[in-house]
Image 1 (cartoon, rainbow, N blue to C red):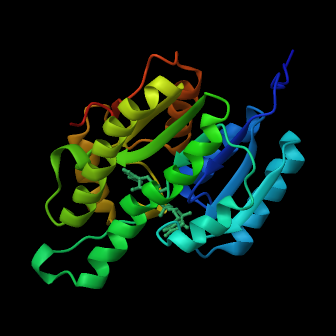
Image 2 (image 1 turned 45 degrees about the vertical axis):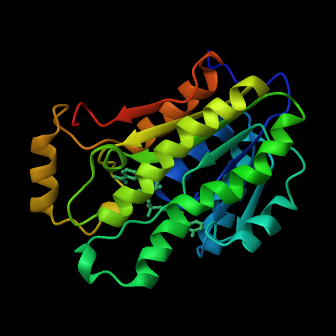
Amino acid sequence: MLEEKIPDITKYALVTGASRGIGRGIAECLAKEGFHLYLTCRHSRAQLSDLAKTLSAQYGVSCLPVIADMGDPSDVDRLFQQIPSLDVLVNNAGISYIGLLHEMSVDDWKEVMHTNLDSLFYACRLAIPLMLRNHSGKIINISSVWGNVGASMETAYSASKGGVNSLTRALARELAPSGIQVNAIACGVIDTDMNACFSPEDREALRQEIPADRIGQVSEVAQMVLSLLHAPDYLTGQVIGFDGGWM
Ligand code: NAD
């Protein structure tokens, strides 16, 4: 018999960058677990609204879609004005940039940093006071293996994710006494539109480098997020490699 999961208490989660890809998969997974959701993305209003409606109808949770540039502090302030309570923050919104560093414009550099790293500061500084009220909370940052080892042609991206990893470790220490856990998932290659720029040949070459012999799936990252939510509170400050044994 199928068992329907009903949470014993009301829990609220914010997932940034939820219109597609990994963020969407995480949103679906959390809705299934009974979380009420705040979902953001930068541009795709219709896609995000459709997702919110579908998840509300399917799982009976409330779901608020908000268009917000997470790299813009005033947008993030406006978002949090609509959030009275928060148990889980998933910092997922991110962009990639592929190209030689010396050919990258200052504006492109700033956009990568604003979106991938500054956004965590803007969201965390407003989420933490909400979590402190309950002396509990989980912050999960979606990072990349490149934040640990660095990728050629993705220097800005690697630097931004390296920042995410350091922020994760430092903030975890700061918040552990307050009952809030901070962890990151450093993904390898996951099958999303972010990788649509790769040719079939590039994808095949990547696959051959990965010991698990395949590219990762969005549902697997979502499952990992769920595992972190269910993990003992003693697990904090970790950057968990999630790459099929690649790095
Ligand atoms: P994606 O491009 O499919 O989706 C990105 C999402 O982020 C979209 O919903 C987009 O609207 C949103 N977004 C982008 N900029 C934003 C902004 N300024 N404000 C708000 N939302 C914004 O990407 P994905 O593959 O699902 O990646 C999600 C996260 O996972 C990113 O942080 C990415 O760096 C990380 N990641 C992905 C891979 C991979 O192989 N796909 C690997 C490692 C890490």
